[in-house]
Image 1 (cartoon, helix red, strand yellow):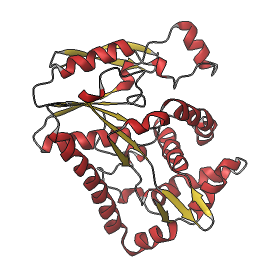
Image 2: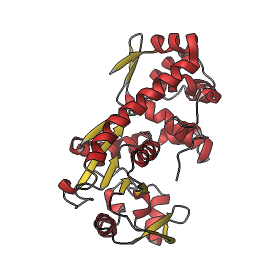
Image 3: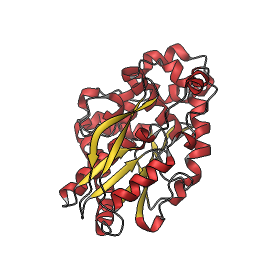
Image 4: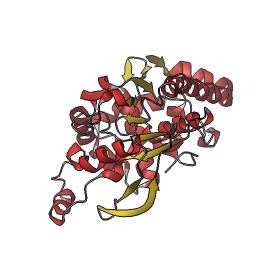
Length: 306
């Protein structure tokens, strides 16, 4: 799907609040149609796997689906596959600090533990949920035990959840979702690729919450894209349902949050198309975004979080 930035600007300038409400409702409707189908198979497929590249809005989408399933009488739990990372050895930590370790690799996942727990959850056997400490790259006891009851569902959310080398549970017993930005923005002769929209999302999130400069995030762009092309994109065809997470008003919100910092990065040619599009984007205040919007995963003040 393609959408012109001028068309978005016209909607924002006519009534930003009305447009935001319309877009959020359209996204919720997209999820509701999928949730209806998921709920119909909850007894045969009580486990949901949700995958997508970095900046796709996996976490918020997972929690929105959880909320919808709860409302339909199917209590649901959402777990992050990040907590199933293997602890790094001292040598691996040194390599990672030097940028000589592939941190996007599916080999980072403790596949045995993950699959054992997926199967236990499916059979309503209690499992102690792991907790990964990113500060020291170690696994800790979470002291949280999950016991799925009959009729309940569990979502495992993570970038490798559609990779058959990671998940060995038969497809016939799981529901698979793939989420990402699929819409392209057109502006004159420019067509902004969805990966650039996800990049802007990561830039905002990294800047606001991870103490990382925009330039540092941009420096990681090539390696992140490479990891996605190797480890995520080849398996998106395995999904039962695809979800486009683009919010038509998001660039308007990002404009004032990023523009002044991006202007200091005019030496990076890969950002030329982003800059030109943002220059033509009508600004919108982040305070106009409700807390249940998917983009709050990146700009903050959202109601959906672990």
